[in-house]
Amino acid sequence: MELLQLQYFRKVAQLGHLTRAAEELRIAQPALSKTIARLENDLGVPLFDRKKRQIRLNEYGQIFLKQVEIALGALEEGKQQIADQANLIQGRVILASTDHQCDAELVRSFLTMFPDNKLLIKQTYSEIQNQTFLRNGDIDFYITSLPIDNNDLDSYPFVTEEIFLGVPKSHKLANRSSIRLIEFAEEDFISLPTRNHFRQITDHYCNEAGFTPQSVCEVEELSAVSSFVQKEIGVAFLTQAVTHPEIVLLPIEEPVCKRTFQIVWMKNRYLSKSALKFQEFLIYYYQKQEKETNQTP
Image (tube, rainbow, N blue to C red; front, side, top):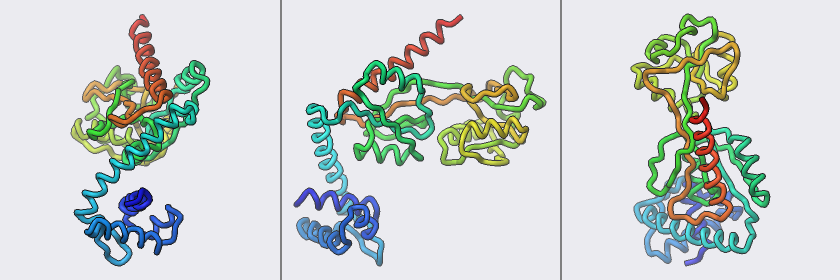
């Protein structure tokens, strides 16, 4: 059994399509098919169910894939440890985020304190993508505001921010000191796409309050949401970071609306010295910020 066979098998299992797998691996499809057939012959059982152009893992394939992931993961981790010790990685840290705009001051402070390090930030589109990158060793960490339900992952919550209801100054409730979310059940909402983590969190709070928000329109960024609220098109969930003189941010007393960001990494996987430095620095940075905020009169 060869390493290349295992790598090819994993790619076909991930994509469920021989042609696409061959394209990504940059080999001819017949050569890929022969490699998979030779692996199945070595094992003495078929690993896939084949139907026309579709190819899906069968029961044997699912069992084998779990062990292949462990084996290839261990090899990748070994390579990373050796590269790190040999100074080949040169202080590189790779971080992914779907809904957290990395604090520029955090990045500046980290790179100032550790000038030999490089921080690469990937913008991702889903929790599945984040976890796939992490599992494959493409990133060191990712940041999320969603709960972690994977036993292979570890996390640390580093900052919590309040979620407000943003209304235009002309709104009938703009002078209130706080509101209950149910009071806005019949309002038009400016929303982010349903795939967005912030939207998922705020939809959950609306459901908790007893209604489904009526989205009059959806936009891609919170800054765009803010501009629509300014034009009195609707109301929206916003954070303190998205402020404008023409928008009033109303605290929500029921339910309490907050989101907590976590930094996530693979449990029991080797982290380079640079990655550990960044992890420790991020935790220290936000702990210091919280302490300074609490001390402010």
